[in-house]
Length: 161
Image 1 (cartoon, rainbow, N blue to C red):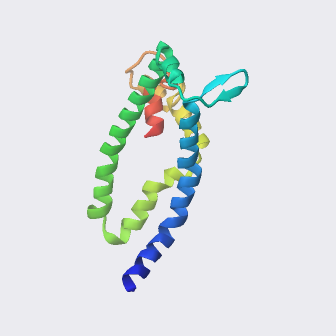
Image 2 (cartoon, rainbow, N blue to C red; image 1 turned 60 degrees about the vertical axis):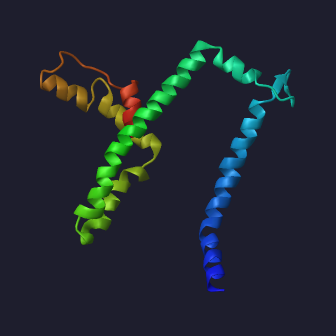
Image 3 (tube, helix red, strand yellow; image 1 turned 120 degrees about the horizontal axis):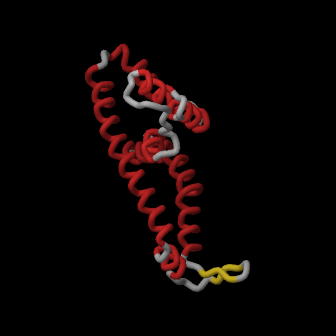
């Protein structure tokens, strides 16, 4: 009896989040996948299953380039995030004294509380042609003139990491 009650309590904790994820992520994703297999004609959808939409997508080079670029940025971002996250997690778990662990964890999580707009604008100010990085490189005489790192693949990866 006690074991069944424990499992029921577990579902009480996971149930609302699972229900939310299924209702607002899985179901819309399945609907979009189904619509991607349908045909369209003159403002209406024909429910005959077909892979013509995928054939049209993969037959255009600019679509393939966009897909490959997105996958490359995703892979690079994931690798850099893993390389940075595991040592940070190890340090937080085993090297920081227990009385400072909560503060260190809050310091690590705090940047994620800012909005995407604020973070994006902040990165733009740092990476633009008259930003901190460009001015520092000019001051150190590494570059001759202003350089803009904004609107580049490196800036995109940096923003995602």
